[in-house]
Image (tube, rainbow, N blue to C red; front, side, top):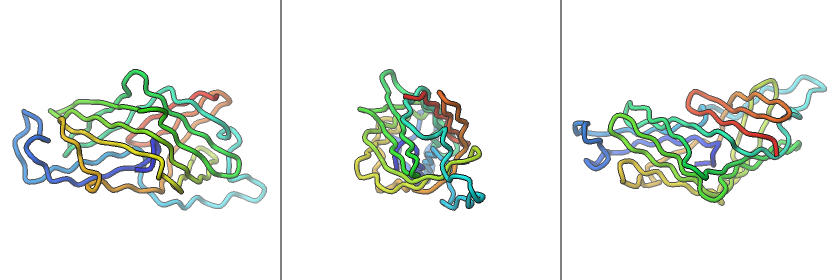
Length: 192
């Protein structure tokens, strides 16, 4: 995974402990976690004289709201942060950034007999183009970022998880607030 602004997908052969009590055993369960919409890092070129970086994005942002959807089979599980979760993001005017889970950021949720916990820690670096409400990101270094996924008290092995380091999302920015959204997540930040 590539930090809080990452995309995880996983195809996992379900073992009985992963299945909810009210779920009948199936041959295979698919777990898909999506934070950002999948897509290529192909931002359109800026019109002449227009910066690749919206100046409103530039700076340090402290996370205030973090919601994401994790899918187990066809069951969407809405994840919310536990008290004390701390995360942030830095956008620089040279088109680079840092995505941060400060300490441990733990998100939990339950639906359809599935209890999901996602724990994130560390930082990842990325390059970006942000203008006109579209933000294209490409992870450049995530060696200082780590995470774990637990479904119904079973740790999901990382070798079953795949990620995409390139994607495009929507943003809304004002001098004091930043919102990042896609079909499977909603993040809000305050400047500072």
